[in-house]
Amino acid sequence: MLGLSAYRQLVATAPRPTEEQCTDFVRYVATAHSWYKHLPYRLPGVPLVFYIDPFAGCDAVREGGATRLVPRESQGFHYSALPTMDYRRRFGHLSLPETRRHTRQRHECRRDGVTRRRPRRHQ
Amino acid sequence: MVSLADDLGVISDSEGRWWALPAEIEQTAASVTGLVHPGAAQQLIWGRASPDVASLILESGDRDTMARIIERGRQLDDGEPYSKFPLEHPAPSGERWADRILYDLLGPERRRQQAAMLEAIHRMLDLVYGAADPPAST
Image (tube, rainbow over all chains, first blue to last red; front, side, top):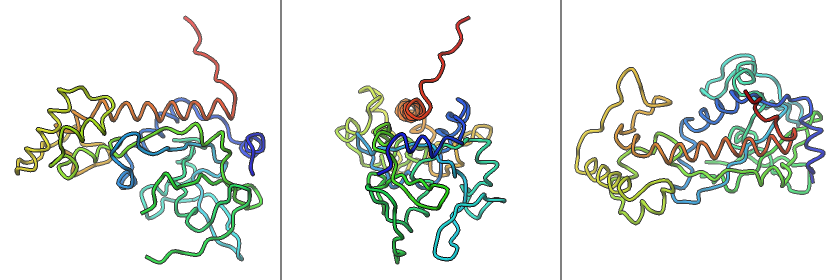
């Protein structure tokens, strides 16, 4: 399992976001389209975890059976698919699980360490 | 539908391996409900809500506010048109289905949850980078 000190090492290259980036990220998340529809309305609600991701704002690309995260050069189809440079300018390396949904759906995350690829879901 | 409660934060290392977030990071989470979003200010949610329901979903609302929210929901359910946002102050994120009156009434709860999100970020940052320097005294 990834412990706290290993996590700190993993994100060591990511600078601490500024207070303005933190505030902007909260505003962005709290007004983003659609995702809130999956939340319950009753208290206490559900836990929302923020974290630092060295690859925040990057695209997940499949290459030869592996997934690589690469900077997004231009605006994607979805409004939230910001170019990586814009994302980093606005929010630093802040991230939350919701922003990795599409990536996460392709991986099964194990508490004890490395994840493995998860089969695609059929709607 | 995938519930956020079932979601795990994942992080990739430089070799493309994926890891679950440390438990300590997950423990810095904020609790949020759908009311954190301006789109919650609509008839679909409040049209037939009872006062009992309001007390279950608003932590920051007093009795008067809750009564006004319930009344406004009832008005919308009876066919009263949505109160529009002024053009110079459109609803955040261009939310088309928000009622301005409900939006204002839900403001304290929305702001409370957004403040909780910011506090959660600070807890996480202090854990990762160490406590931030306090603001310089004047």
